Image (cartoon, rainbow, N blue to C red; front, side, top):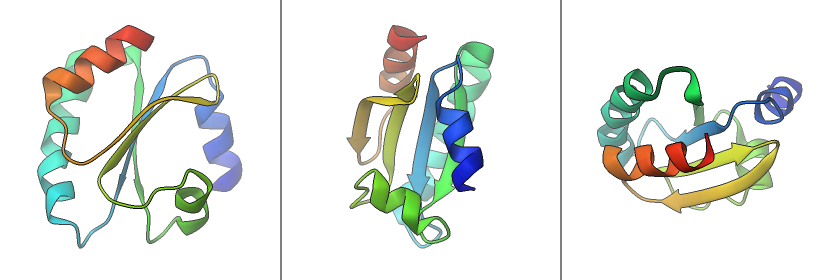
Length: 99
C-alpha cells in the first residue's frame, strides 16, 4: 500500500482520506456520509478509506491519533484535517474549496 498510497496522494485530484477502524462506532456513522459525499462530488475529488489497524505505518506517518480522522491531500500535501464525525455539508464545503 505504501507505494500506491504515495502515487494516490500525489495525483492531480485532491484526495479525501477517511482514516477509520472496524471497531470504531463513530466511523460506522461516518461511512454512509462519505458514500453520499462521493456521489455528490463525483470526479472532483478521490475519496478513499484507510483502516488504521491494517495500515499502521501510514496512520503513524500522518499522526492519526483518533478515528475517524478525515484528511484532505492536494498535490501530496495535507491541506485540511479533522478528527471526529463530520457532516456531509462541511465535507462538501472543504472538498469544493480545494477541487
